[in-house]
Length: 504
Image (cartoon, rainbow, N blue to C red; front, side, top):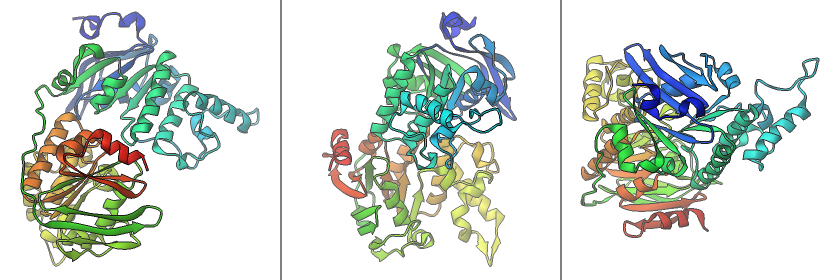
């Protein structure tokens, strides 16, 4: 079967980027198997698939970081070589999930990084640099000053600076890898306005996201990978959510069912928790078997509440009690000893040690359980880790495998396994399904419900409103470091939550 028949006729004359028969292997892994992919000028192509489907590998091939074992990638008919600088020169720009700006440099310096205008003596022409940066910013972020240090920008503005860099390079293709992960709804809306403007001016955009609502809102066409193979590429108008999910996972993903369960005594009581310029008089309770959601915009103070409860951040006044006993402030070991577990927002930076094995990461908080007089029992460590890996169905070739090689969903299971082995009374989950695929989201949602059914108290922080509305018994809405509303199941709607999150 020829390429046109497999991925859609007409790409040969219309497409700005064409990948044909791409195969790429790593030791023990066939990451991509004869994959075809194309992007037309003036369209948003969504690239979808579960973690481990091959999306990241294809992105790195298009960005010039890898060379294919077989097949070719053409940009405007010219072969792309495995060199990031060459990919930029060919017109392919990539915006990664985490912004790649130099914090101590200005916006202008970042936009023209590696292409600073110089005079005949090699001195940078600052005025020219600022003017060229301002011209690029005018199209995507006119509110930003070229002189501002990049490190002072919000996540949303850093994304816009990276887009401005792509514009300044006259890029033909813009690859956006999970660009909305750290953005609030208003910031996402602004980003999508920019994307639509770039699309109207003929840029081809590859949009990678686990959020199907965003895909259906912004995309013209969808390409789905599964297990390194091309499943299909179809116009968004021909698809619905269920069809896309089936293409991604190869099976039906049933909706999460939330059975009724008894709610017990108060486990966590937070009273008048305050931290200057961060939190103000935070008070709430979480009971045994209860899932309390915490919603709000990015920067509202949700993660800061979790950090104070767990003892990572200090607070000026207030108390945290677990099962009636005061938890010592600013002391994570006291929180752990009291029975609190925390799955932080950024698993790679805040929870996992990428160079260590899956087994070592599972047992990081459990050293007291298999050590005697400072000596570790490796046999007991293996027993504990293997039990938890099996209980949470962590997909790994071996417990000795580096945790950094696992998919996002399985990395998150490793963090969960670490805390569940301690059997905490309270589990704080900060964005537990951030950056993981639909199948893994469903598994983790089911796990959260099972833990609550077993009597565990759960504080669930999430920016995903469907997750909050489906899983929680009550919702605390935060705005500007304060709890602006406490809503029970019947009162909690998307409209109500967003109203309390955005209005005074």
